[in-house]
Figure 1: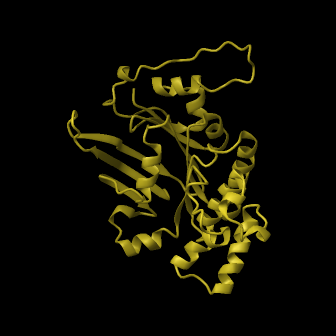
Figure 2: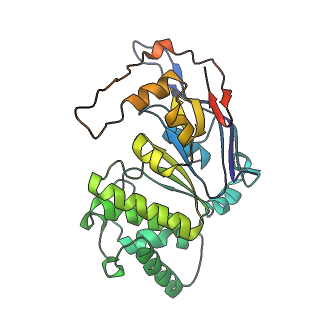
Figure 3: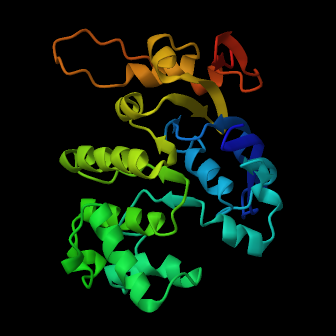
Length: 292
């Protein structure tokens, strides 16, 4: 049985009527289904506005979905009471895209990492302090700096603090929402390597949300491609990158920069109006599905 199973997830946002516009409903996530196996790094890719982040936040009920199901170890998270959801949050965590805006600027690093332990009433004060120092070391930071404020750390260090906070409750499933896109390229590799080391060390399962396809190819075993709120292709990373089937996937892959500036480029420009959003996914090859 998969660790996480998303079934027919839907999220509508309603935009109120204005002086010159009628009330409209936008489908940010439209009938999305996929599953994630224990210990896997599953990629969710697509351009900005495709619905990736909304999907991730609906899975943890940071945003309430309009309909569908999200099963974690067989239980539907969307049916949980607030008390049961709080318990489940110990097992399911998220690392946000922007490490600066996701950390309270008025709290010291020590308080930020300790906060989940206080909320869930775990350990004595001394035990929590010890756990915070241990988490700091785990993500490659020096506990000497625990009393600094977020602005006193670099972008890469702030993201590590966010990771320490997410790992404080020993989760088994972590959603990584574009965790390195706000960082310098030189720092990205360090943070990605740390994520992979932590996964192996702590037996974590990741949902990796990204638009950087080179990164996804490097670290994800399977990947789903989102376009205008729908999954248009899903399969093993090797299969999808070698033999993309959907026009949108081909357009995305054609945009990946190549190391050789003299190599011939064949950039594909896709007209969104040419894509029929009502086509359902069908199996093209073993484990490789596309909406064509």
